[in-house]
Length: 317
Image (cartoon, rainbow, N blue to C red; front, side, top):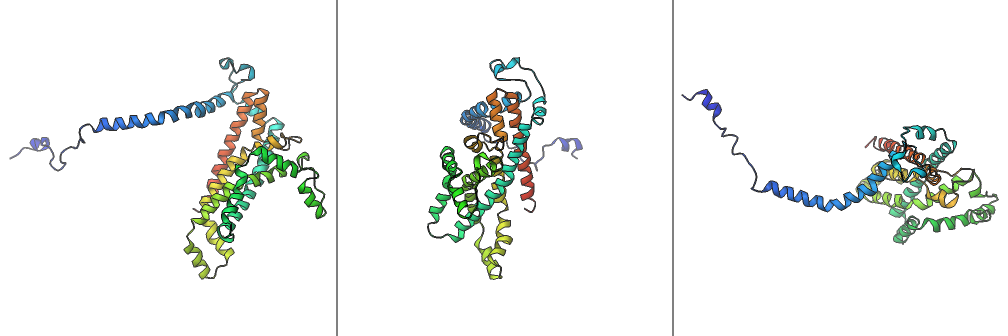
């Protein structure tokens, strides 16, 4: 009789032979990994130097008292903690810049999305002839230099420019758009919407073309009007596309800088000063700590708004 100890010590036949892989498999995997890292090394190095290092440097600046005088001796600065962030929210100019940025985002994003979606729908169904021409024409402002755009829109916004001339035809006396604190921000919003709706239009157009035509055809057979089909079928299926457009526009519009920089220099009376323009001015004044803190407040705002949009547009997904 075989003893219990001998049975326990016997190798298990059911388990089968242990697979150790072909000879040299481990060294081959290590060689491929090394080659992959060698190809990635230039990009990783460039990203670390021009991406990670500036971010960490600006973060350290935001919690120190570094100024333009200390830039050559960064180790002589003192740690001030959150003093710059506290000072920002006590600065009336920064608070005004924050309200201006909020105003620009709250008006500019919905207006841009509505215009972009309307033109995408028109290009996808209504405009059949010269469709390629209209796509290029609508996208042209995106690739046009901001300096050239600024020159044209400055003439349009002159007191005797084309916009006021058109308003005068219907009996409206137009304002001095860029020099009136009440109208300078709406003027920049109008120019920004015209300049930036091209990319959202292309994204919406791609989303519309991905909707199965069978669903729309079935809705028409069931008696649904075009408006009802758009509201009940097209818009729900465009929810992921709308999320992408909203996040991209939020990131861009929260950082709006070029419009006030080339058109109004933040004026009149700081009515077009944005957070980005405020940070730019602080860097120019040599207040690197305040400028970096303002930049990170903007980063936090972008992150919070993006998270909010993910919750809104993915609620029914």
